[in-house]
Length: 166
Image (cartoon, rainbow, N blue to C red; front, side, top):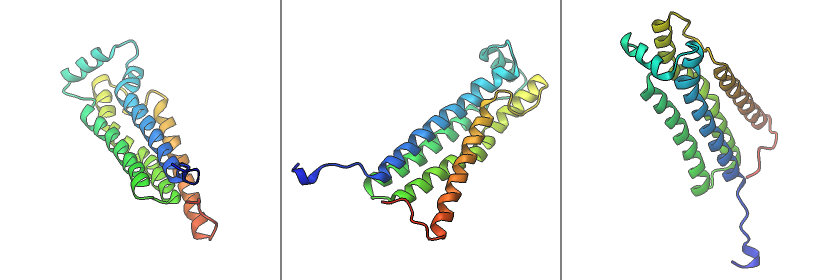
């Protein structure tokens, strides 16, 4: 590679990489919230095995396949944005908007994926079906920030403010 062919990372690839890393972290934290932290907070002193056994006796579930599907779907979507940025020269603004949209949609989709687990815990242990551990609210806050950032990018673009450079 000659001196005029120095490799410079593409901004879109960097943005898509950050979005991918954030989505992976969000998916892991969301899965742990539903499958570990929330059940343990809802039933203090019980192990996960004891919680699962009691739920099985009550014909309830934490809906592990649904939660795993939720997490993997988000990761695959973010990976798709990353691959598009690498292979198709996706503009940086599009990479940012898509990455932010994936994280913003994490909140409603997380609620959907966690609903059966929360209701199963509520029905089995006579407690509320909402979050007992604080991390669910943190995930929702991250999604709200991502949504707000997405709105800023869209409004800036519509008002003629220079978008993120490619």
